[in-house]
Amino acid sequence: MEEIVEKCASLILAGSPGALLSAAELLEDTRNDSCGSESAKLGFSRVLQEILAYKRGAVSDHLLQQIVKFSADSNIDSELQRLYACKVLVALTESEAVAKYCAGEKQKARLLVKAFMEAQAYLLERMPDQLRGKKCIPEKYLGRQKDGDQKHVFLNLALENVKGFASFSFASKTFRLALQKAGFKGFFPSLESLLSREIFKQASLQLVEKALKHYSGLMRSFCLFEKSQNWAFNHGMIRVQASLARLVSLDGATERLIDPWMLEAIEGIPGGAGVSRTVLFRMLLAASEQGLLDLDRRIRDKRNVRATKTVREQWLELGKMRVPRGTMPLIGLVLGELASVPPFAQALFKSALGIAKNRADLEGGRTSEAPIVCSWERCDEAGSEDDAGRKFSKCAKCSLAFYCSKEHQRLHWASHKRQCGDKSQQADLHHITKVDEEIGNEPE
Ligand SMILES: [Zn+2]
Ligand SMILES: [Zn+2]
Image 1 (cartoon, rainbow, N blue to C red):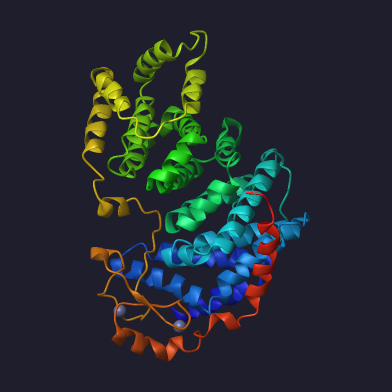
Image 2: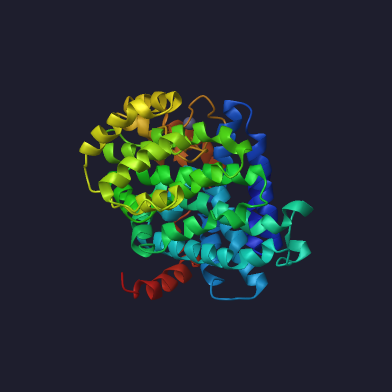
């Protein structure tokens, strides 16, 4: 483990696009190796946490610096450096500890939101060229992309950014707030345009699955809390959902993807939030064309939408509807429709009504696959932090190591003392803080 941590950390700190790409691939391999047993999974969490703790958080601070520093440059080396730094950071945020650390402070959260939104905009802008087969990325920076996948490198990176948004907003309220402020108009529309038919036309099923996974993860993270949920519904999330549903039905072969995604989306909704369940249920109906037509007809009657519009236009129209807080009567409306929906949808809706009544259920919607674990490498049996709602204590000096007990902290000290120290002494952070002051001057 120590070897991987050391290797990965030094690749990241070396900082060239090639080194960052190698680090990302190393993390991906380590993650794939950890899929087997429960203790292997804990081991993966621990690797990510150790990378976080490396030299008092130097790795994540360095990545953040790279992401901010190169956002202004427009040459391809700088752009790749930033994009690959985002990629590595997103890979690290599979650990909840990393996501919390990176996005937990207001300043850093704002920097992250800004940088990731810029990166996303850049990728969207450059993607058409790349899809047309123009070589945008020098050979040496392509990593192990296969020939056929090369033109989807940008799409891949953009989907990973979506995953980053999801992990950060799941882990940190500060990040969700920063996103709401910064992304007021543009956030969901930009996510929506990434799902355009054109972009996914020749994409592999794998990429479609990736899109479904990360998008539903992001939307779930917004649905976990009532405030952000309402914000999301009122600023275009439903349209994104509609695009996702369309993406799923692009060709008949992907139809099998519908059920798990819908179920997942519904399971992420907290109890009592009737509105969102209703909206999701409407989307569920979209899975069956007949159900969609029935529902649209009724909504059209209610809202006086002209009959000449296509089903898709109406659906998008529905997506623009503002969802008022606590509109319980909508539930009644939907229940009234229950008789006319396909049986599988009825079953899903019924199960949706019966779930997510308490905090423990919400936790089931978490997006991070590497929960916080005790940092002592031999503490396998202690499991992860969220088992039975337990909280680990942090190292008082650096706040970057986590312990289930005093005893394990003592045992871990032998190796941790080399990484531990007072964070305020670190010069690296000054740069980040300085940049943030400039951003802080923007109107909110
Ligand atoms: Zn322990
Ligand atoms: Zn420490």
